[in-house]
Length: 330
View: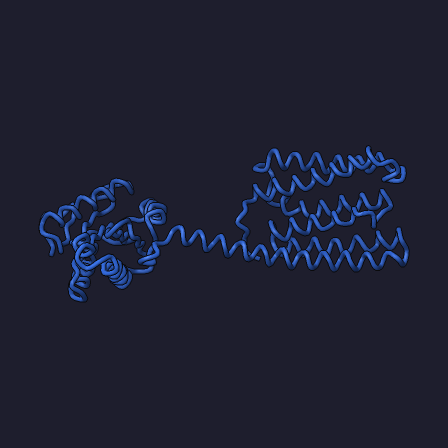
C-alpha cells in the first residue's frame, strides 16, 4: 500500500483519539448502565482508563510518539477491546463493533501489512472469545465479525488509494504550468534552491521570448501560447534529464544546468538560441550566470542571470550574454 497523505503525527493523533473515545465510552457505560459489565466494573474501568491515558498522551504529544508505537496502536486497540469482551462476558451487545475501529485506522494510516496483521489478530482473538461465552452460537457472530473486518480493510484500502491519487494529481497540477507542461515558478523555487545547495559547478540560463507582447497583440493569444509551447519543446530537446527547467512567468523560462562550467553554459545557451531561430520565426534572448563565479546563493544567481538577460535585450535581442564574459555571443 502506498503512503498516505497524512504524516506520522496525524496518525498518532487520530489513533490516540480513537483510544480516548473507545475508553471513554466504556467508562460512561460502566457508570451509567447498571449491570453492564456483570460485576466486573473495576477491571473494565481499569482497561478503559489505560486506553484513555495512552490515547490522551498520543493526542497531546503526537510528535513524541515513535513510529513503532504508532504501528502498534491498531493491535493495541484490538487487544484492549478483546480484554473488555473477556471481562464483560459479552460479545453481541454492540461492543464488537469497536473491533472495526483498529481496522479502519490501520488500513488508512498504516501499511497494508500492519492492517492485515490487525485483521488476523481479530480473526484469532474474537472467535475463541465469542465461542467461550456463547458456545456454538458464537460461531455465527465470529464469521460475521471476521468477514466484516476483511471487507472493511479492502474498502478502506481502496479509498486510501483513491485519495492518494487525487492528492498526487492536485499536487502535480499545482506545480506544473498547464500551457507548456513544464514546472511552474513554485516548483522552480524549491528545486532551484536545492540545486544551488548541492551543485558545483552550475550555470543558470534565463531565456526570454523576444517581442512576445507584439506577437500577442498582432496575432492573438493563441499564437502566443503556441510560441511558448514551442520554446518549451526546444528547451526539453536541448537539456538533460538532470537539468531543471521551468516557466518562470510570462514569456520567461529558467534552465539550471548541473555540472556545467561557464564555457559549457554559454555553448548550450547558444544552442538553444540557434535552435529557436532556425526552427521558427521566433527568437529568444538568453542570460547566463555561473554559480560561485557570479553569485553564491540562489537569489543572487537569479539576479545575475536576469541582469545578463536584460543586457541581451538591450543589445538588440536574439543574443546570449553572460555576467562574467565581456565578449557578446549572438
